[in-house]
Length: 550
Ligand SMILES: Nc1ncnc2c1ncn2[C@@H]1O[C@H](COP(=O)(O)OP(=O)(O)OP(=O)(O)O)[C@@H](O)[C@H]1O
Image (cartoon, rainbow, N blue to C red; front, top):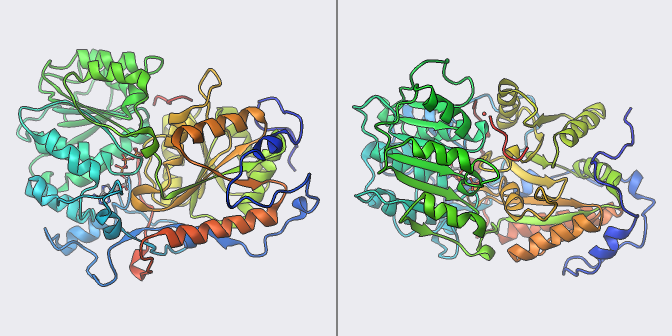
Protein backbone atom coordinates (compact mmCIF):
# COMPACT_ATOMS: atom_id res chain seq x y z
CA UNK A 1 0.00 0.00 0.00
CA UNK A 2 1.23 3.39 -0.74
CA UNK A 3 -0.10 6.71 0.26
CA UNK A 4 -0.86 9.40 -2.21
CA UNK A 5 0.94 12.25 -0.59
CA UNK A 6 2.90 14.46 -2.90
CA UNK A 7 6.51 13.50 -2.71
CA UNK A 8 8.18 16.79 -3.36
CA UNK A 9 7.71 19.43 -0.77
CA UNK A 10 7.12 22.17 -3.30
CA UNK A 11 3.59 23.58 -3.32
CA UNK A 12 1.25 22.12 -5.87
CA UNK A 13 -0.09 24.54 -8.39
CA UNK A 14 -3.39 24.68 -10.16
CA UNK A 15 -3.93 21.77 -12.50
CA UNK A 16 -3.31 22.26 -16.17
CA UNK A 17 -1.03 25.19 -15.61
CA UNK A 18 2.07 23.39 -16.69
CA UNK A 19 0.49 22.27 -19.88
CA UNK A 20 -0.71 25.68 -20.83
CA UNK A 21 2.83 26.95 -20.56
CA UNK A 22 4.29 23.96 -22.25
CA UNK A 23 1.93 24.42 -25.15
CA UNK A 24 3.56 27.67 -25.98
CA UNK A 25 6.59 25.80 -27.16
CA UNK A 26 6.27 24.02 -30.44
CA UNK A 27 8.62 21.27 -31.29
CA UNK A 28 8.48 19.46 -34.57
CA UNK A 29 7.75 16.09 -33.02
CA UNK A 30 5.21 17.51 -30.64
CA UNK A 31 2.12 17.86 -32.74
CA UNK A 32 -0.37 15.82 -30.75
CA UNK A 33 -1.44 17.57 -27.65
CA UNK A 34 -4.05 16.10 -25.40
CA UNK A 35 -7.02 18.18 -24.39
CA UNK A 36 -7.37 17.73 -20.71
CA UNK A 37 -6.96 14.63 -18.65
CA UNK A 38 -6.79 11.34 -20.46
CA UNK A 39 -9.02 8.79 -18.75
CA UNK A 40 -7.03 5.99 -20.30
CA UNK A 41 -3.86 7.21 -18.70
CA UNK A 42 -4.32 5.38 -15.43
CA UNK A 43 -5.14 2.10 -17.07
CA UNK A 44 -2.40 2.35 -19.63
CA UNK A 45 -0.57 -0.81 -20.44
CA UNK A 46 2.28 -0.50 -22.84
CA UNK A 47 1.71 -2.51 -25.98
CA UNK A 48 5.18 -3.92 -25.62
CA UNK A 49 7.64 -3.16 -22.91
CA UNK A 50 10.48 -2.10 -25.10
CA UNK A 51 14.06 -2.09 -24.37
CA UNK A 52 15.69 1.28 -24.29
CA UNK A 53 19.07 -0.18 -23.72
CA UNK A 54 18.79 -2.49 -26.69
CA UNK A 55 17.89 0.37 -28.90
CA UNK A 56 19.97 3.15 -27.60
CA UNK A 57 22.86 2.01 -25.51
CA UNK A 58 25.99 2.09 -27.51
CA UNK A 59 29.19 0.67 -26.26
CA UNK A 60 31.85 1.78 -28.54
CA UNK A 61 33.41 -0.43 -31.06
CA UNK A 62 35.71 -0.06 -33.97
CA UNK A 63 34.67 -0.75 -37.54
CA UNK A 64 33.36 -4.24 -38.22
CA UNK A 65 35.96 -4.65 -40.86
CA UNK A 66 38.57 -4.35 -38.14
CA UNK A 67 37.89 -7.48 -36.15
CA UNK A 68 40.80 -6.98 -33.81
CA UNK A 69 39.19 -5.49 -30.76
CA UNK A 70 42.40 -4.68 -29.04
CA UNK A 71 44.65 -1.97 -30.37
CA UNK A 72 47.61 -3.02 -32.41
CA UNK A 73 50.17 -1.00 -30.52
CA UNK A 74 51.41 -1.18 -28.01
CA UNK A 75 50.42 -4.81 -27.61
CA UNK A 76 49.16 -5.93 -24.26
CA UNK A 77 49.73 -9.49 -23.25
CA UNK A 78 46.75 -11.81 -22.94
CA UNK A 79 47.08 -11.83 -19.19
CA UNK A 80 47.04 -8.07 -19.10
CA UNK A 81 44.03 -8.07 -21.33
CA UNK A 82 41.95 -10.38 -19.28
CA UNK A 83 42.73 -8.83 -15.96
CA UNK A 84 42.42 -5.23 -16.98
CA UNK A 85 40.93 -4.65 -20.35
CA UNK A 86 37.62 -6.12 -19.39
CA UNK A 87 37.65 -4.52 -16.00
CA UNK A 88 38.04 -0.96 -17.11
CA UNK A 89 34.90 -0.37 -19.05
CA UNK A 90 34.17 2.90 -17.27
CA UNK A 91 35.11 4.36 -13.91
CA UNK A 92 35.20 0.76 -12.79
CA UNK A 93 38.44 -0.57 -11.46
CA UNK A 94 37.89 -4.22 -10.83
CA UNK A 95 36.02 -6.94 -12.53
CA UNK A 96 32.89 -8.21 -10.91
CA UNK A 97 30.20 -10.70 -11.73
CA UNK A 98 28.18 -7.89 -13.26
CA UNK A 99 24.44 -8.21 -13.02
CA UNK A 100 24.01 -11.91 -12.62
CA UNK A 101 20.38 -12.82 -12.18
CA UNK A 102 19.22 -9.38 -13.12
CA UNK A 103 17.47 -8.65 -16.35
CA UNK A 104 20.35 -7.20 -18.28
CA UNK A 105 19.79 -6.36 -21.87
CA UNK A 106 22.55 -7.04 -24.29
CA UNK A 107 24.27 -4.03 -25.61
CA UNK A 108 23.99 -3.45 -29.28
CA UNK A 109 26.76 -1.64 -30.94
CA UNK A 110 25.46 1.32 -32.84
CA UNK A 111 28.31 3.71 -32.66
CA UNK A 112 31.69 3.35 -34.13
CA UNK A 113 34.07 5.34 -32.07
CA UNK A 114 36.48 5.49 -34.95
CA UNK A 115 33.89 7.43 -36.96
CA UNK A 116 33.18 9.83 -34.13
CA UNK A 117 36.88 10.34 -33.63
CA UNK A 118 37.30 11.11 -37.32
CA UNK A 119 34.67 13.87 -37.24
CA UNK A 120 36.35 17.24 -36.59
CA UNK A 121 33.13 18.56 -35.05
CA UNK A 122 33.00 15.82 -32.47
CA UNK A 123 34.59 16.37 -29.04
CA UNK A 124 36.14 12.96 -29.35
CA UNK A 125 38.01 13.95 -32.54
CA UNK A 126 41.76 13.91 -32.67
CA UNK A 127 44.46 13.81 -35.24
CA UNK A 128 47.18 12.49 -33.03
CA UNK A 129 47.76 9.22 -31.29
CA UNK A 130 48.74 8.63 -27.69
CA UNK A 131 52.15 7.53 -29.01
CA UNK A 132 52.64 10.98 -30.58
CA UNK A 133 51.91 12.56 -27.23
CA UNK A 134 55.22 11.15 -26.04
CA UNK A 135 53.87 9.20 -23.13
CA UNK A 136 56.09 6.71 -21.40
CA UNK A 137 55.77 3.14 -22.53
CA UNK A 138 54.18 1.90 -19.31
CA UNK A 139 51.38 4.42 -19.79
CA UNK A 140 50.84 3.45 -23.40
CA UNK A 141 50.48 -0.13 -22.23
CA UNK A 142 48.01 0.98 -19.57
CA UNK A 143 45.97 2.85 -22.18
CA UNK A 144 46.08 -0.14 -24.43
CA UNK A 145 44.57 -2.55 -21.95
CA UNK A 146 41.94 0.04 -21.16
CA UNK A 147 41.11 -0.03 -24.84
CA UNK A 148 41.84 3.66 -25.35
CA UNK A 149 42.94 3.74 -28.95
CA UNK A 150 42.99 7.41 -29.72
CA UNK A 151 42.84 10.53 -27.57
CA UNK A 152 39.74 12.71 -27.43
CA UNK A 153 39.97 16.39 -28.35
CA UNK A 154 40.53 17.50 -24.74
CA UNK A 155 43.17 14.84 -24.24
CA UNK A 156 44.93 15.74 -27.45
CA UNK A 157 44.93 19.46 -26.66
CA UNK A 158 45.52 19.35 -22.91
CA UNK A 159 48.28 16.79 -22.74
CA UNK A 160 51.00 18.70 -24.63
CA UNK A 161 50.20 21.78 -22.51
CA UNK A 162 50.26 19.77 -19.32
CA UNK A 163 53.39 17.80 -20.06
CA UNK A 164 55.71 20.57 -21.25
CA UNK A 165 58.42 21.84 -18.96
CA UNK A 166 58.65 23.97 -16.97
CA UNK A 167 55.16 22.91 -15.85
CA UNK A 168 52.40 25.40 -16.60
CA UNK A 169 48.98 25.69 -14.96
CA UNK A 170 45.92 24.69 -16.98
CA UNK A 171 42.22 25.44 -16.93
CA UNK A 172 40.56 22.80 -19.09
CA UNK A 173 36.94 22.55 -20.10
CA UNK A 174 35.24 19.93 -22.19
CA UNK A 175 31.85 18.29 -22.39
CA UNK A 176 30.83 15.61 -19.91
CA UNK A 177 32.13 12.14 -20.65
CA UNK A 178 34.92 13.22 -23.00
CA UNK A 179 37.83 11.87 -20.99
CA UNK A 180 39.09 14.68 -18.76
CA UNK A 181 40.07 12.17 -16.08
CA UNK A 182 42.56 10.46 -18.36
CA UNK A 183 44.02 13.83 -19.34
CA UNK A 184 44.92 14.83 -15.80
CA UNK A 185 45.80 11.28 -14.80
CA UNK A 186 48.33 10.93 -17.60
CA UNK A 187 49.92 14.21 -16.54
CA UNK A 188 50.32 12.99 -12.96
CA UNK A 189 51.59 9.55 -13.94
CA UNK A 190 54.10 11.18 -16.29
CA UNK A 191 55.43 13.53 -13.63
CA UNK A 192 55.61 11.24 -10.65
CA UNK A 193 59.05 10.16 -9.39
CA UNK A 194 58.58 6.63 -8.17
CA UNK A 195 61.82 6.57 -6.22
CA UNK A 196 60.26 9.07 -3.81
CA UNK A 197 57.77 7.48 -1.44
CA UNK A 198 55.73 10.51 -0.46
CA UNK A 199 52.84 12.42 -2.06
CA UNK A 200 53.72 14.26 -5.26
CA UNK A 201 50.36 14.65 -6.98
CA UNK A 202 47.06 15.51 -5.32
CA UNK A 203 43.61 15.36 -6.91
CA UNK A 204 40.70 16.93 -5.08
CA UNK A 205 37.15 15.95 -5.99
CA UNK A 206 33.83 16.98 -4.46
CA UNK A 207 32.54 13.60 -3.29
CA UNK A 208 33.88 10.33 -1.95
CA UNK A 209 32.34 8.43 -4.86
CA UNK A 210 34.15 10.57 -7.40
CA UNK A 211 37.43 10.51 -5.44
CA UNK A 212 37.31 6.71 -5.32
CA UNK A 213 36.46 6.50 -9.00
CA UNK A 214 39.42 8.71 -9.93
CA UNK A 215 41.75 6.74 -7.67
CA UNK A 216 40.57 3.64 -9.50
CA UNK A 217 41.31 5.14 -12.91
CA UNK A 218 44.79 6.24 -11.78
CA UNK A 219 45.46 2.76 -10.45
CA UNK A 220 44.39 1.01 -13.63
CA UNK A 221 46.11 3.47 -15.95
CA UNK A 222 49.25 3.17 -13.83
CA UNK A 223 49.19 -0.63 -13.63
CA UNK A 224 52.53 -1.00 -15.37
CA UNK A 225 54.17 1.44 -12.95
CA UNK A 226 53.19 -0.66 -9.96
CA UNK A 227 56.27 -2.80 -10.27
CA UNK A 228 58.32 0.39 -10.01
CA UNK A 229 56.55 1.25 -6.79
CA UNK A 230 53.55 3.38 -7.76
CA UNK A 231 51.12 3.74 -4.86
CA UNK A 232 47.77 5.51 -5.14
CA UNK A 233 46.05 6.57 -1.90
CA UNK A 234 42.55 7.81 -1.17
CA UNK A 235 42.13 10.70 1.27
CA UNK A 236 38.48 10.25 2.16
CA UNK A 237 36.93 9.56 5.57
CA UNK A 238 38.16 6.28 7.08
CA UNK A 239 40.45 5.53 4.12
CA UNK A 240 43.63 5.83 6.18
CA UNK A 241 43.81 4.87 9.86
CA UNK A 242 44.05 7.95 12.04
CA UNK A 243 47.63 9.00 12.64
CA UNK A 244 49.04 6.86 9.82
CA UNK A 245 51.31 8.67 7.40
CA UNK A 246 50.20 8.85 3.72
CA UNK A 247 52.67 7.02 1.53
CA UNK A 248 51.12 7.16 -1.93
CA UNK A 249 52.81 9.29 -4.57
CA UNK A 250 49.38 10.08 -5.95
CA UNK A 251 46.64 11.04 -3.50
CA UNK A 252 43.00 11.44 -4.50
CA UNK A 253 40.78 12.96 -1.85
CA UNK A 254 37.96 15.18 -0.79
CA UNK A 255 39.01 18.60 0.49
CA UNK A 256 37.82 18.21 4.09
CA UNK A 257 39.66 14.98 4.78
CA UNK A 258 42.73 16.08 2.87
CA UNK A 259 42.91 19.31 4.88
CA UNK A 260 42.45 17.33 8.04
CA UNK A 261 45.35 14.99 7.19
CA UNK A 262 47.57 17.95 6.38
CA UNK A 263 46.73 19.62 9.68
CA UNK A 264 47.51 16.41 11.53
CA UNK A 265 50.78 16.22 9.60
CA UNK A 266 50.04 12.77 8.28
CA UNK A 267 50.13 14.21 4.75
CA UNK A 268 53.64 15.37 3.92
CA UNK A 269 53.21 18.06 1.28
CA UNK A 270 56.87 18.91 0.73
CA UNK A 271 57.30 16.89 -2.46
CA UNK A 272 53.91 17.89 -3.90
CA UNK A 273 54.25 19.11 -7.48
CA UNK A 274 50.83 18.73 -9.12
CA UNK A 275 47.48 19.85 -7.69
CA UNK A 276 44.46 18.88 -9.76
CA UNK A 277 40.90 19.96 -9.04
CA UNK A 278 38.31 17.86 -10.80
CA UNK A 279 34.88 19.54 -11.10
CA UNK A 280 36.92 22.67 -10.47
CA UNK A 281 34.05 25.18 -10.73
CA UNK A 282 32.25 23.30 -8.02
CA UNK A 283 35.40 22.97 -5.94
CA UNK A 284 36.17 26.68 -6.19
CA UNK A 285 32.67 27.86 -5.45
CA UNK A 286 33.06 30.18 -2.46
CA UNK A 287 29.68 29.11 -1.12
CA UNK A 288 30.96 25.56 -1.14
CA UNK A 289 34.44 24.16 -1.04
CA UNK A 290 36.38 27.14 -2.42
CA UNK A 291 37.71 28.16 0.94
CA UNK A 292 38.86 24.65 1.81
CA UNK A 293 40.60 24.20 -1.54
CA UNK A 294 42.38 27.51 -1.10
CA UNK A 295 43.58 26.46 2.35
CA UNK A 296 44.86 23.16 1.00
CA UNK A 297 46.71 24.97 -1.77
CA UNK A 298 48.28 27.38 0.76
CA UNK A 299 49.93 24.39 2.42
CA UNK A 300 51.58 23.20 -0.83
CA UNK A 301 54.92 24.28 -2.31
CA UNK A 302 54.61 27.57 -4.21
CA UNK A 303 55.63 26.15 -7.59
CA UNK A 304 52.97 23.44 -7.68
CA UNK A 305 51.38 22.92 -11.10
CA UNK A 306 47.67 23.72 -10.75
CA UNK A 307 45.32 21.88 -13.07
CA UNK A 308 41.61 22.69 -13.13
CA UNK A 309 39.13 20.60 -15.10
CA UNK A 310 35.38 20.74 -15.48
CA UNK A 311 32.64 20.63 -18.07
CA UNK A 312 31.38 23.94 -16.74
CA UNK A 313 33.10 27.17 -15.72
CA UNK A 314 30.39 29.73 -14.96
CA UNK A 315 31.60 33.34 -15.20
CA UNK A 316 31.31 33.86 -11.44
CA UNK A 317 34.03 31.32 -10.66
CA UNK A 318 36.33 32.05 -13.58
CA UNK A 319 37.97 35.01 -11.87
CA UNK A 320 38.80 32.97 -8.82
CA UNK A 321 39.91 30.07 -11.01
CA UNK A 322 42.37 32.35 -12.80
CA UNK A 323 43.79 33.51 -9.49
CA UNK A 324 43.91 29.95 -8.19
CA UNK A 325 45.81 28.84 -11.29
CA UNK A 326 47.83 31.92 -12.20
CA UNK A 327 49.16 32.20 -15.75
CA UNK A 328 47.18 29.13 -16.78
CA UNK A 329 46.75 27.99 -20.34
CA UNK A 330 43.03 27.85 -20.99
CA UNK A 331 41.01 25.39 -23.05
CA UNK A 332 37.46 26.68 -22.97
CA UNK A 333 34.16 26.04 -24.72
CA UNK A 334 31.23 28.25 -25.73
CA UNK A 335 28.07 27.63 -23.68
CA UNK A 336 26.19 26.33 -26.70
CA UNK A 337 28.88 23.76 -27.36
CA UNK A 338 28.53 22.24 -23.92
CA UNK A 339 25.71 19.82 -24.48
CA UNK A 340 26.52 16.34 -25.61
CA UNK A 341 24.79 15.61 -28.90
CA UNK A 342 24.21 11.96 -28.06
CA UNK A 343 22.00 12.84 -25.09
CA UNK A 344 18.36 13.24 -26.15
CA UNK A 345 16.59 15.76 -23.94
CA UNK A 346 12.90 15.46 -23.12
CA UNK A 347 10.50 16.65 -20.48
CA UNK A 348 7.49 15.05 -18.88
CA UNK A 349 4.66 17.50 -18.55
CA UNK A 350 2.88 16.55 -15.34
CA UNK A 351 -0.32 17.92 -13.97
CA UNK A 352 0.78 18.79 -10.46
CA UNK A 353 3.25 17.47 -7.95
CA UNK A 354 1.67 14.12 -7.14
CA UNK A 355 1.35 13.37 -10.83
CA UNK A 356 5.12 13.36 -11.02
CA UNK A 357 5.38 10.21 -8.97
CA UNK A 358 2.66 8.45 -10.94
CA UNK A 359 4.30 9.48 -14.19
CA UNK A 360 7.64 8.22 -12.95
CA UNK A 361 6.30 4.80 -12.21
CA UNK A 362 4.39 4.62 -15.50
CA UNK A 363 7.44 5.76 -17.39
CA UNK A 364 9.44 2.88 -15.98
CA UNK A 365 6.61 0.58 -17.01
CA UNK A 366 7.16 1.54 -20.64
CA UNK A 367 10.56 0.06 -21.16
CA UNK A 368 13.51 -1.78 -19.84
CA UNK A 369 16.38 0.52 -19.14
CA UNK A 370 19.89 -0.80 -18.63
CA UNK A 371 20.61 1.53 -15.73
CA UNK A 372 19.10 4.87 -14.85
CA UNK A 373 19.54 7.62 -12.32
CA UNK A 374 16.67 9.63 -10.83
CA UNK A 375 17.87 13.00 -9.54
CA UNK A 376 15.92 14.87 -6.88
CA UNK A 377 16.73 18.07 -5.00
CA UNK A 378 16.21 16.90 -1.45
CA UNK A 379 17.29 13.95 0.62
CA UNK A 380 13.78 13.40 1.95
CA UNK A 381 12.36 13.29 -1.56
CA UNK A 382 14.92 10.62 -2.43
CA UNK A 383 14.02 8.58 0.64
CA UNK A 384 10.30 8.95 -0.03
CA UNK A 385 10.49 7.87 -3.65
CA UNK A 386 12.61 4.91 -2.61
CA UNK A 387 10.06 3.95 0.03
CA UNK A 388 7.11 4.16 -2.31
CA UNK A 389 8.73 2.44 -5.25
CA UNK A 390 10.04 -0.34 -3.05
CA UNK A 391 6.59 -0.79 -1.50
CA UNK A 392 5.20 -1.16 -5.00
CA UNK A 393 7.65 -3.90 -5.81
CA UNK A 394 10.24 -1.92 -7.77
CA UNK A 395 13.88 -2.74 -7.18
CA UNK A 396 15.56 0.59 -6.55
CA UNK A 397 18.58 1.89 -4.65
CA UNK A 398 18.97 5.27 -2.99
CA UNK A 399 22.12 7.24 -2.22
CA UNK A 400 22.25 10.64 -0.54
CA UNK A 401 24.50 12.53 1.83
CA UNK A 402 22.28 11.27 4.66
CA UNK A 403 23.98 7.86 4.44
CA UNK A 404 27.28 7.15 6.11
CA UNK A 405 30.35 6.47 4.01
CA UNK A 406 30.20 2.71 4.26
CA UNK A 407 26.57 2.62 3.22
CA UNK A 408 27.26 4.98 0.34
CA UNK A 409 29.99 2.66 -0.87
CA UNK A 410 27.70 -0.32 -0.61
CA UNK A 411 24.83 1.30 -2.52
CA UNK A 412 27.09 2.73 -5.17
CA UNK A 413 28.66 -0.67 -5.73
CA UNK A 414 25.24 -2.22 -6.19
CA UNK A 415 24.54 0.33 -8.87
CA UNK A 416 27.87 0.14 -10.61
CA UNK A 417 27.78 -3.61 -10.81
CA UNK A 418 24.25 -3.62 -12.20
CA UNK A 419 22.76 -5.35 -9.17
CA UNK A 420 20.60 -2.25 -8.79
CA UNK A 421 19.38 -0.75 -12.03
CA UNK A 422 17.57 2.33 -10.73
CA UNK A 423 19.44 4.75 -8.51
CA UNK A 424 17.56 7.56 -6.77
CA UNK A 425 19.95 10.24 -5.66
CA UNK A 426 20.57 13.90 -5.01
CA UNK A 427 23.12 16.25 -6.51
CA UNK A 428 25.74 14.35 -4.56
CA UNK A 429 26.17 12.13 -7.63
CA UNK A 430 25.47 14.77 -10.25
CA UNK A 431 29.09 15.22 -11.23
CA UNK A 432 31.83 13.04 -12.59
CA UNK A 433 30.32 9.64 -11.99
CA UNK A 434 31.09 7.37 -14.90
CA UNK A 435 28.90 4.30 -15.22
CA UNK A 436 28.61 3.45 -18.87
CA UNK A 437 25.43 1.42 -18.60
CA UNK A 438 23.45 4.51 -17.60
CA UNK A 439 21.18 5.14 -20.55
CA UNK A 440 18.55 7.28 -18.87
CA UNK A 441 18.72 10.23 -16.47
CA UNK A 442 15.56 11.54 -14.91
CA UNK A 443 15.41 14.99 -13.37
CA UNK A 444 12.50 14.35 -11.06
CA UNK A 445 13.13 17.89 -9.84
CA UNK A 446 14.42 20.48 -12.26
CA UNK A 447 17.69 21.58 -10.65
CA UNK A 448 17.62 24.97 -8.99
CA UNK A 449 20.12 26.99 -7.02
CA UNK A 450 19.60 27.69 -3.33
CA UNK A 451 17.82 30.86 -4.39
CA UNK A 452 15.38 28.87 -6.57
CA UNK A 453 16.94 30.04 -9.83
CA UNK A 454 17.60 27.58 -12.66
CA UNK A 455 20.83 25.72 -12.01
CA UNK A 456 22.41 25.43 -15.45
CA UNK A 457 25.57 23.68 -14.38
CA UNK A 458 23.85 21.02 -12.30
CA UNK A 459 21.45 20.27 -15.17
CA UNK A 460 24.34 19.74 -17.55
CA UNK A 461 26.29 17.57 -15.15
CA UNK A 462 23.26 15.49 -14.22
CA UNK A 463 22.30 14.68 -17.78
CA UNK A 464 25.97 14.05 -18.51
CA UNK A 465 25.82 10.87 -16.42
CA UNK A 466 24.61 9.26 -19.62
CA UNK A 467 25.98 9.52 -23.15
CA UNK A 468 29.53 8.86 -22.04
CA UNK A 469 32.31 8.96 -24.64
CA UNK A 470 30.16 8.72 -27.74
CA UNK A 471 27.35 6.62 -26.35
CA UNK A 472 23.81 7.83 -26.67
CA UNK A 473 21.41 8.28 -23.81
CA UNK A 474 18.31 10.14 -22.79
CA UNK A 475 17.39 12.68 -20.14
CA UNK A 476 13.82 13.38 -19.07
CA UNK A 477 13.03 16.32 -16.80
CA UNK A 478 9.75 16.37 -14.92
CA UNK A 479 7.86 19.66 -14.76
CA UNK A 480 4.69 20.09 -12.77
CA UNK A 481 3.99 23.80 -12.46
CA UNK A 482 4.84 27.09 -14.00
CA UNK A 483 8.00 27.58 -12.00
CA UNK A 484 9.53 24.22 -12.84
CA UNK A 485 8.54 24.62 -16.48
CA UNK A 486 10.02 28.13 -16.65
CA UNK A 487 13.21 26.96 -15.00
CA UNK A 488 13.63 24.07 -17.41
CA UNK A 489 12.95 26.21 -20.46
CA UNK A 490 15.44 28.82 -19.21
CA UNK A 491 18.07 26.13 -18.79
CA UNK A 492 17.43 24.68 -22.24
CA UNK A 493 17.49 28.11 -23.85
CA UNK A 494 20.80 28.80 -22.11
CA UNK A 495 22.32 25.73 -23.73
CA UNK A 496 20.51 26.20 -27.05
CA UNK A 497 18.53 22.97 -26.84
CA UNK A 498 14.85 22.18 -27.38
CA UNK A 499 13.56 19.34 -25.26
CA UNK A 500 10.79 17.17 -26.61
CA UNK A 501 7.56 17.17 -24.63
CA UNK A 502 5.99 14.02 -23.20
CA UNK A 503 2.44 14.38 -21.98
CA UNK A 504 1.89 12.61 -18.67
CA UNK A 505 -1.78 12.29 -19.60
CA UNK A 506 -1.27 10.63 -22.92
CA UNK A 507 0.79 7.53 -22.52
CA UNK A 508 0.12 6.09 -25.94
CA UNK A 509 1.62 9.20 -27.43
CA UNK A 510 4.51 9.17 -24.96
CA UNK A 511 5.30 5.60 -25.83
CA UNK A 512 5.17 6.34 -29.55
CA UNK A 513 7.45 9.34 -29.13
CA UNK A 514 9.90 7.37 -27.09
CA UNK A 515 10.08 4.72 -29.76
CA UNK A 516 10.58 7.39 -32.40
CA UNK A 517 13.40 8.98 -30.41
CA UNK A 518 15.03 5.66 -29.95
CA UNK A 519 14.86 5.00 -33.64
CA UNK A 520 16.26 8.38 -34.55
CA UNK A 521 18.99 8.05 -31.94
CA UNK A 522 19.95 4.88 -33.62
CA UNK A 523 19.84 6.36 -37.07
CA UNK A 524 21.72 9.44 -36.03
CA UNK A 525 24.67 7.29 -35.22
CA UNK A 526 27.29 7.17 -37.91
CA UNK A 527 27.02 4.07 -40.07
CA UNK A 528 25.19 2.08 -37.46
CA UNK A 529 26.28 -1.50 -37.58
CA UNK A 530 25.95 -4.10 -34.96
CA UNK A 531 28.55 -6.39 -33.60
CA UNK A 532 28.45 -9.13 -31.08
CA UNK A 533 31.64 -7.81 -29.64
CA UNK A 534 29.95 -4.80 -28.25
CA UNK A 535 28.72 -6.29 -25.05
CA UNK A 536 29.78 -3.96 -22.30
CA UNK A 537 29.63 -4.60 -18.64
CA UNK A 538 29.27 -2.11 -15.88
CA UNK A 539 31.54 -3.50 -13.31
CA UNK A 540 33.58 -2.45 -10.41
CA UNK A 541 33.97 -2.51 -6.76
CA UNK A 542 34.64 1.05 -6.04
CA UNK A 543 34.67 2.45 -2.74
CA UNK A 544 32.88 6.98 -2.15
CA UNK A 545 32.33 12.55 2.15
CA UNK A 546 31.36 15.59 1.74
CA UNK A 547 28.11 15.74 -0.15
CA UNK A 548 28.19 18.37 -2.81
CA UNK A 549 24.98 20.27 -2.74
CA UNK A 550 23.13 17.75 -0.69
N1 LIG B 1 40.70 8.07 -25.36
C1 LIG B 1 39.70 7.31 -24.91
N2 LIG B 1 39.27 6.24 -25.61
C2 LIG B 1 38.23 5.50 -25.16
N3 LIG B 1 37.54 5.73 -24.03
C3 LIG B 1 37.92 6.78 -23.30
C4 LIG B 1 39.03 7.61 -23.69
N4 LIG B 1 39.17 8.59 -22.76
C5 LIG B 1 38.22 8.36 -21.81
N5 LIG B 1 37.47 7.28 -22.15
C6 LIG B 1 36.32 6.74 -21.40
O1 LIG B 1 35.31 7.74 -21.47
C7 LIG B 1 34.52 7.73 -20.31
C8 LIG B 1 34.35 9.15 -19.79
O2 LIG B 1 35.59 9.65 -19.32
P1 LIG B 1 35.70 10.63 -18.07
O3 LIG B 1 34.95 10.05 -16.91
O4 LIG B 1 37.11 10.96 -17.89
O5 LIG B 1 34.88 11.87 -18.63
P2 LIG B 1 34.89 13.38 -18.10
O6 LIG B 1 35.20 14.24 -19.25
O7 LIG B 1 35.74 13.50 -16.87
O8 LIG B 1 33.34 13.52 -17.73
P3 LIG B 1 32.61 14.42 -16.60
O9 LIG B 1 32.63 15.86 -17.10
O10 LIG B 1 31.25 13.84 -16.56
O11 LIG B 1 33.38 14.26 -15.32
C9 LIG B 1 35.21 6.82 -19.31
O12 LIG B 1 34.50 5.62 -19.24
C10 LIG B 1 36.59 6.58 -19.91
O13 LIG B 1 37.06 5.31 -19.61
